[in-house]
Image 1 (cartoon, rainbow, N blue to C red):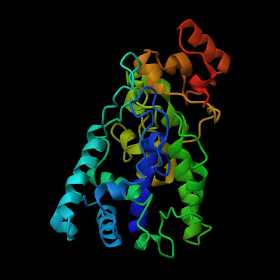
Image 2 (cartoon, rainbow, N blue to C red):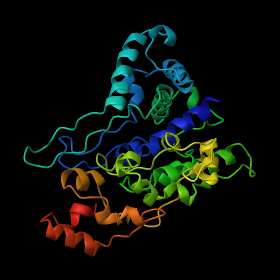
Image 3 (spheres, helix red, strand yellow):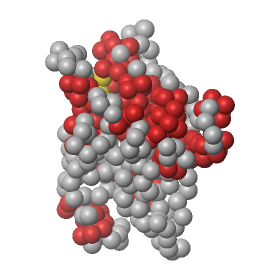
Image 4 (cartoon, rainbow, N blue to C red):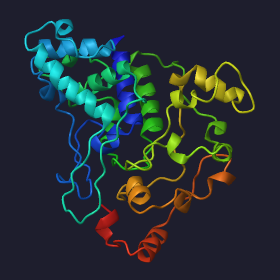
Amino acid sequence: MQGEAIEAGYRLYLSLGCAACHGPEGEGGVANPNYLRSKFPAVKNMAKQLGLTTADRFDRAVGLLAAGLELDEPARMGFSGAGLVAARYADVRDAILAGRSAYKGKREGPEPIPMPGYAGRLERHELARVVAAMLLFAPPETSAWRSEPAPPLSFRSGSKPACIAGLAVLPALAGTAWQGWSVSAWAGWQAKRKGSESAEPFAELPKSANNHAEHEALGIDCVACHFGANRSHRAGLPPLSLCAACHSADRPTPATPAELAEALRQPERFVWPLPAARQPDDVFFSHAAHVRLVGMGCSECHGPADTKAGPLVRPVTMAECMSCHEQRRANNDCLACHR
């Protein structure tokens, strides 16, 4: 069961948008305009950061995290130096829950994108499994997690799951549907790993779950569901646990159609559909830069939400972007958007 728990942690890593900045394998390197260090940091060296450099420490820690237990009690870890590991884990936990500011490279330049906090959106056992998934980006050479048969999150060269290999060549851009694409890929890989060709396939969420007009009529702000729109490159897709805060899986009503209630009862089976309009691979776009720094409204690019019964899909052309940049006296240099 440890493998399944860590897979859940990796799904959270993707769906919360961590991969958009830190990379699908924790490699970092995504540009953060006017950040003092210029790029978002890597998290693939989490084991070294926590002091889990030996296989026995690493395997013990991953086992606890997979069980949903945090590394906050040295006695629970039961190895020498556990107190230092607990202190370092506390720093990582606090950064994930409270977020971190990003220092400006140039005083007169724009504000860089900070790391958002996930307090209230991550249960503590979920946070533990996200950290476990990050640890497995680079396990020690003699760790049991590198042994055969390959564990669910083996990132060794030549034995990556198909979804990881695919994600590695995708740009970590705002607007990429990390959650829908990656969870579907995990499902296919997991079925193959278990030797089952008859595993129940993942289903796309029903159109009723994307009814922007009904949500707009209730006065629900865009960032209530797309919580990265004003603080990250990507706007983000809400987890079904967020939908469940308003919708009931047990009592289908006009506000919660039967097909949505079914998705809420089996959230592990449903994923968001891929967007019909996607950015080209060479285009960099930051929602936060446009929303928070420029003050643009969502409808300026996506169109009015109050008239859309389904997803907001309106492809934006390069000519439109350049025209808007010209009107607002923004940088229209090719390398400002194409990287």
